[in-house]
Length: 402
Ligand code: CTP
Image (cartoon, rainbow, N blue to C red; front, side, top):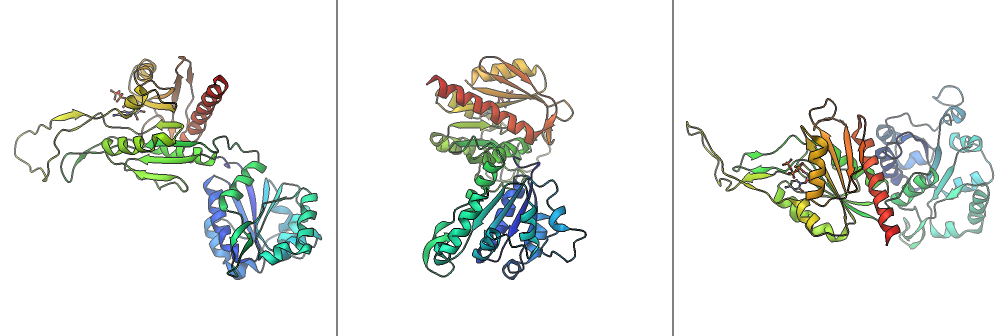
């Protein structure tokens, strides 16, 4: 969660684009930021404070002299890392430019000593108005960063410049201003996650205890670092992460198909899925009935997706996982060699805090050169970041060698 320890104040002013602030809030929250929303009186005419309150899980502030105790325009700034005004109306921009402080948000801005980002949204004629442009210049001169509005269909029905920048664009700027790494921008990464299910009959299947948490954490971390992420997932109980391309692949066969289909687009493949090694050779077309005696099911080996791709020696960086119960490092090194991987992340599933359903993991990362990085118990979110750091180090080395 790249914004995990960041405190952001989101100021919403009275534009028709105020509803987009809801999406911006969600994106900041899902990257882990602690977001407090402040609204001007006219913003409340467009979206209710309750919406922001529920989504931010925090009080929404708007009144300089109202419900809040003490001096909210000062206390809200404590520990704040960044202020984002989105959308910013022409009226609000001009107020900021002339230092007017007649409500909570404008007063707070005069005291703020943290980076301020302003994302204007208005009709194109208003945006082009020399007074507004003068205001924008003044804000720029004082170090405030303007997230340029886009061209397109406006609320008036006309085409022109003045649409609020895209949520992704605004998120990028927030990250840039906070010096957050977006080192995977422009990269396409495939992540597989969760267990596969191999049908026995129309109601039963063979599967394993993988929760998918590790793969989903990697997908989210890669997305937040700017990658286009294709998440190919077995059936899990986890919510679909936002802003990743999600492909459901319940069986090994379906997972293989999906991975091979998207492989040409990707420069990185991380196979965190717990793929079945065997499947019933002939799944029964009808439900198996109890017969009063023992039952044998003939099994056949599944395709080894990673081995097949490793043998092709593609340019894609290949990362595998090895969940082991013994001889962790030896087994992992063998898999890395056999499947021709760049990295393998191994863990001993018998250790407390290192198992399948856990939120944490105790992993060892081994690379082609045989270097072994033993990591302590940590949240899967943090492990995801370390894995991506290692992948990026490989990519940089590859680029330097070409
Ligand atoms: N894997 C795969 N296709 C399979 C099985 C595994 O792509 N049919 C991938 C997994 O996603 C993982 C890596 O290979 O990244 C190692 O998986 P694992 O099940 O630990 O290894 P196996 O080679 O199946 O060996 P084992 O006999 O220990 O199960």
